[in-house]
Length: 67
Image 1: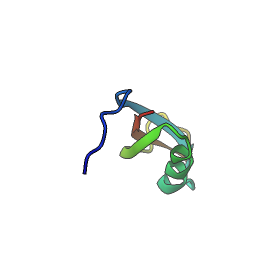
Image 2: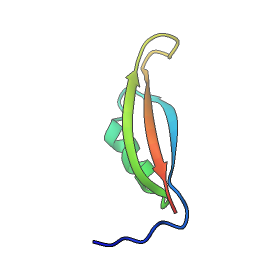
Image 3: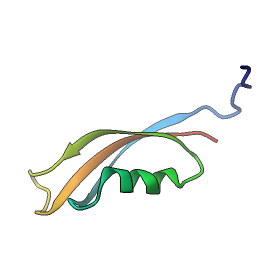
């Protein structure tokens, strides 16, 4: 099926969010997907420990934006 070439190219950005351990990946993705320019979102890292406070975790995402 033919699809026209997008006027604006897609752009990928990596972002890490520190959230409580009770917050699920799906909850975060649902919020991010609510933004109109988000085309795709992929989680690539979950981190706990180290210098993060007790009860916190870091979720890292690659987000593709496109108009």
